[in-house]
Structures are given as structure tokens and as C-alpha cells.
Length: 254
Image 1 (cartoon, rainbow, N blue to C red):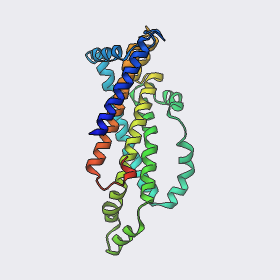
Image 2 (cartoon, rainbow, N blue to C red):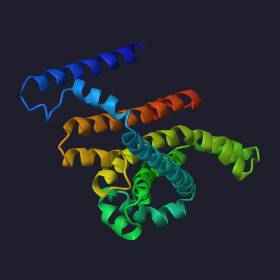
Image 3 (cartoon, rainbow, N blue to C red):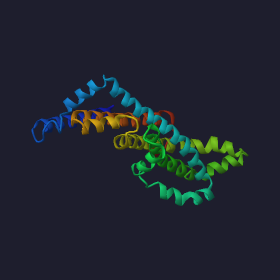
Image 4 (cartoon, one colour):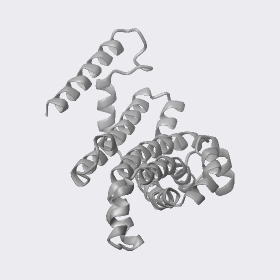
């Protein structure tokens, strides 16, 4: 409770400082609108159908991307973590692909599949797969070997060793990977919407508001909402991790 109160005080102090700076005349308010103006505009926009549809488009694309990334990365991480020969065989390819930024692939994806929603979802999946894949893979390698050997000593089949020993051990790290992947996917989605369209979305709204009439209040309102979405996603997953994965070590729960 005390930590939450400190967080609220910190945000309030930050907003007050921004309000004072914006109204001090150091910069024109059309370029640096005060938080009070931005928040008022955000409330107004939330009552507009087109803006709400843009937000829904981004959130829906994010949910689809996270689902696809989980389907690909979690089994892939389990497979690479449990089969050393396969991990060695694909290690160089994974190390080559992982550092490539998703936004650098925008031209290739646009040429290959066009500028529809599938393009931004594909790029978000690409960005989200890596933290989830590596968290799962390395968590599996860090399992105490005695636990696995003990299970095998009781003649548990391989699939039961996986279900009863290995999966509960890697679950906290998989959820940590999901948290990292969720934030990364949201950033990539909004970036792709700004740069390539992607059939609307919050990023497209921010781009149009900034390039058309230069409505910085709307740009900041969209940016603030993106930050709120990212905060809610991270806080929701952290809460689920604390509630449902109570055996998580401290390092995996943060």
C-alpha cells in the first residue's frame, strides 16, 4: 500500500512539474501542451467512435500477436531447452535473427503481404517471440537435475516428468518472458502503425494528428494512452504471476 501511495505521489509531482514548465512560456503550448490540456483531450477522444476503434484495433492486434508468439515460442523454447543437438544446430540461426529489429523488416513484410493488419501482427509476433523463447529455453536448462533424476527414479514416463517437474519449474520464467514480450509487441505494433499504417490503430492516429494539423495535444493524448495500455498489461501480468505462480523465485517474479 505504501509503495502504491509513493507511486501515485511520484506521478502527481511529475505532472505538476510538466504543467509548470508547459505554462511557463519556455515553449509554445501548441508544441508542448500542459498535462491538463492533454488529459482533457484524451477524455474527449475516448468519447469519439473513430478513436475508440483505433484503440480496439491496436489492442486486438496485440492480443492476436501475443497468442501466436506464445504458440510458437513456448513449445520452441521447451524443445530447444531439452534437445541439446537441436539447440546447437539452430543456435547460430537464432543468434543471427534475434538482433534484427522488427521495424527494419517493414519494407520486406509490406512487399510480401501488404499493409493490412496481418503485417503489423507478423512483425509484433517476430519481436515477441525472442524474449519468450529464450526465457523458456534457459529456464529449462537451469532446472535442478536432482529433481528430474528423482522423478525418473520413480519410473515416471518422460511426459509426466515434463508436466509435473519441468513445466512448473519453468512457469515463472515463462511468465516473465510473457511480460517482456507483451511490452515489446505493443511498442512494435504502434511503431508499425505509425510507419506503415497497418489498417489503422493508435499509432496511425498519433501519426495523422502530428503530421496533419500539428495537433500536439492529440499526439500527446495518444501517447499517454499507449503508456497507460503498456502499464496495464505489465501490471496485469505481474499480478497474475504473483497470484498464480506463488512458487516463483524472487528473480523471476520481478
